[in-house]
Length: 156
Image 1 (cartoon, one colour):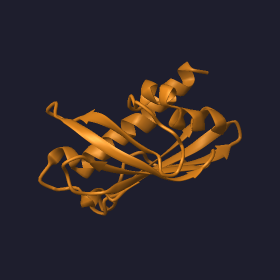
Image 2 (image 1 turned 90 degrees about the vertical axis):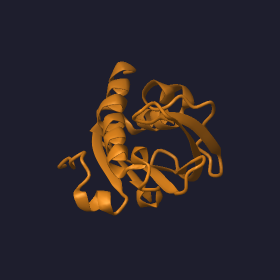
Image 3 (image 1 turned 120 degrees about the horizontal axis):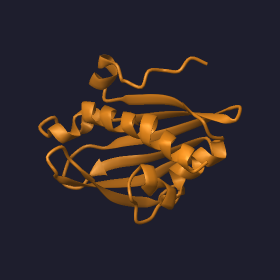
Image 4 (image 1 turned 120 degrees about the vertical axis):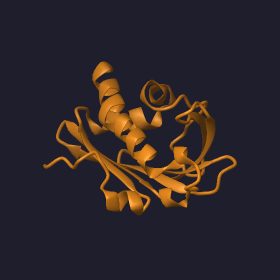
């Protein structure tokens, strides 16, 4: 299977979408745990106080902007299909806009195809450069093509 580029196209960025695909060298069960277990998530993603892959579960975490600003991310799980799909809303305290993050998993033998989509990025204010789509593309690319694979290999 041809691996899709990890960089979003200009059209996707303008449309408020980031999509990244990566074939991970781990079985789907292990990838699912890495994206749904808060103790594993803190190793490659964000340090969440609590997380449950249950529809309606709300969670929040702080992330840092380019100049050190702290942003409180407000999220709610909206769809769960175990070992196949996880979707949650993503917004920021004090800022307008609502987006959605989806992790799609497909088995590829002993490996897993992960397709991450982050939609609705165009709803965030263009006046805040930290909320620019290019930053989301950069952040998700780092998480999905570098940090998550390194974590999965380390924990093998």
